Amino acid sequence: MGVVDYEYYSTVYGGTDADAASFPALCARASDIIGAVTHWAIDESTIATLPALHQTLYKKAICAQVDFFALNGTDSINETASGGFTVGKVTVHAKANASCGGKLSESISPLAIGYLEQTGLMNPQIP
Image 1 (cartoon, rainbow, N blue to C red):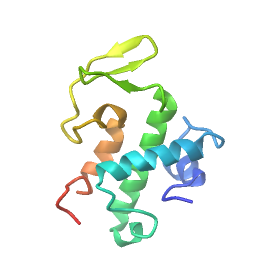
Image 2: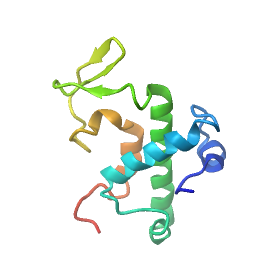
Image 3: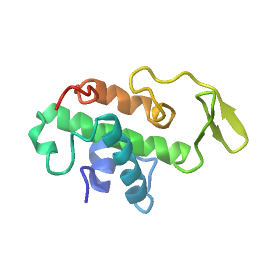
Image 4: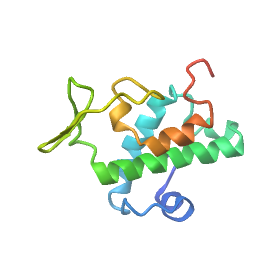
């Protein structure tokens, strides 16, 4: 299963960009990205230890990342040396996201970062 299922995504979050067939793969990839930027502090067994608001924000971050991948693709995004990305024949040069930085910065939803910033989970010093 996972922290988020399709029912939560479509009914609670109100997501519409991913259909039921593509959701499992997108959610698995989204969960990996969110896990990486939160230093793998949360999983199915530990999410219940978070305050209710933080649980909701963490789940919303995964859903926002699912939408990001549904709209932008997961396999077609390649990083370039300039810090941007290439999708097909289009290259976008961008500054790294100051909130998460590193190689993941172009592959993460700004909305997901917005949700996570409110939880403190992106701080590497928070256990």
